[in-house]
Length: 161
Length: 161
Image (cartoon, rainbow over all chains, first blue to last red; front, side, top):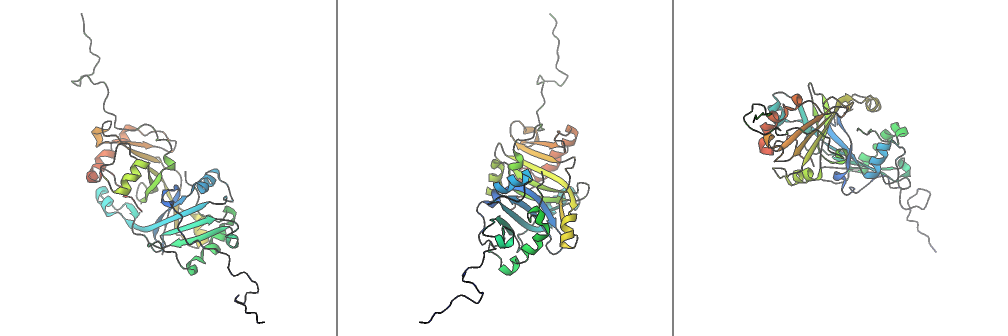
């Protein structure tokens, strides 16, 4: 009898690695409540809104960490551009608004402590302007940077009343 | 018999001028859906979110003007400040976030073609950081400037998908 192993040489028989990336856009996210807004300069050069599902927004408003299971935070980013039409009316360069969707258009963090145990209980995701998920290589940078704010359960954004 | 007039000399008997300003904050506005975001430089120096009630958001998404009766648009503004905590983690000045509420914290436009006929069918309002309505003198500047975009039913903000 010949036993053929189809498991690569990782030393254990689990055929699936822990999923750490979210591959589907949470439905209805564009209707979610506002958590806050921000502008990122430099290479990103975007203006962004951070929305949350009801579980996430409730936790933010109560100031509770860690976030409960099922919390999802959505980050929408747009190119940061001057509004020529507004500036013309105001008579000066004053107004900056969202432009086109950049390659890093949508990002989500999904709380599932078991499924995403390897990355602090949050799954990370990124979708481009065509709503296609980004490669895992892009995603590998998420958790190391978010670890810097472990005491806030890995969330940079603060709720803005 | 002596007839005493108590009507000031305006030539007609209507004791109430048309209301053009909204004096109460629409309840639940902070739960409304996101229309867009913006940054205003100069004296304002704020970062802002524009939210809408369901009537307003539906009209925006369908690209319909004029907006239907009952549409309300909310503009929340916060001081535009660098995020020291984010920048420390990123290792560069990159991140700008909402700071404190400025005196022009909340603004609303309420569509009621009859009530606000004198100002294009929209009532205007402004509330400070203590949620007190601003003086009418502040509000008198709203309509003249919004008239520049009459063809979009007086709304500067464009919906951002």
